Amino acid sequence: MPEGKRVYTKDGILIGEIVRAYISEFGVHVAKIKTVFEEFPEFEVIMTQLKPTRIMREGKQEEAFVLKEIPIKLKMIIDEKFRLKETAGISVIFTPKAPAPVGPYSQAIKAGKFLFVAGQIPIDPRTGNIVGGGIKEQTIRVLENIKSILETAGYTLSNVVMAFVYLSDLTKFKEFNEIYAQYFSSVKPARVTVEVSRLPKDVLLEISVIAYRE
Image 1 (cartoon, helix red, strand yellow):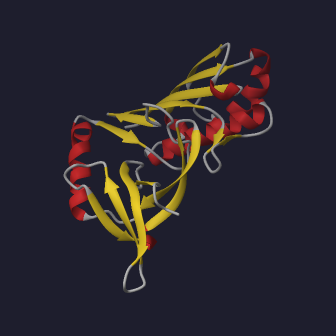
Image 2: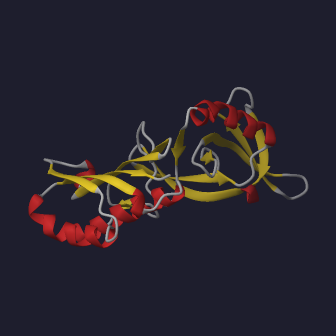
Image 3: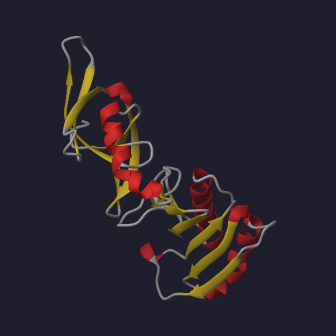
């Protein structure tokens, strides 16, 4: 049943949650959504306007929906609330092709011509689980997540100017570096690589990058 499931915009902004689902007198499946915006507390849509998705929330995978078409008034409210960040040259980047944030942070922040990508660990965004295998497989997953975030913001790996790499075991550096080099074969960004005592979910690595483009 859809009741209780959260509803988001295509950009990952929380709209609210479904409080009721029913079949109208015309035989149409309808969902009533209670929003998080006082100015537009609730509205109804036909279920075909809701696309099922899965997100990570508080460390757990959760079923949710993406609203395909947002009511004009609600869209104006959302645009207004996020306008200050945009006019200040700062915008939040989100893509379902990378792991959803599980805390008070964003996948990436675009500030002027720079893009700051949050630390990525080897979570498969399709399942919400850590990928199997060793350091090579985990490195591929992390860099694919970063690549997806970059592309969503209009950047590529060749725009990366700085990388911060955290490994749980530096003896695996050679294997990691073999994969890393394949992704940064043309432009090689500056890099910091350190060993840390522990990473979230006991993964083998975490990578954060800064990108720049004119």
